[in-house]
Image 1 (tube, rainbow, N blue to C red):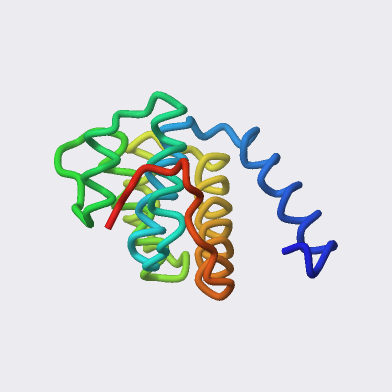
Image 2 (spheres, rainbow, N blue to C red):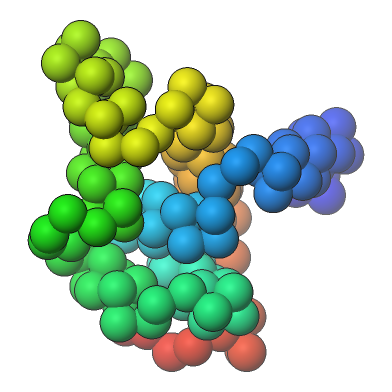
Length: 144
């Protein structure tokens, strides 16, 4: 990103805003890991394994997502992962019933905006790291 300082500045500002978006560390890592897997990002999967661990997120759950699993049950993480996938599949166009269900599942309008923003962030970073062929950092957990 250093080749385009304006983009780098925008990215860093967006990243800082996401930290203040009202999503928990677990919420963000569920979205980021699922997006990294769905987008086939060789860099972001191990990066988010490390970030989830540093943020004390449930690693069993994050590793399940990293393996491509869809979380089962009625946990917030399972609902969020399903919502994330549906938002990606539809380009953000949920039916009235799906939007009502998302709200019933505990995602208010501010959180829905933050979820879409996190998805956009992930599309950008996943695409960027694949384009740049960014090598995973040596301190990241190993992941095939």
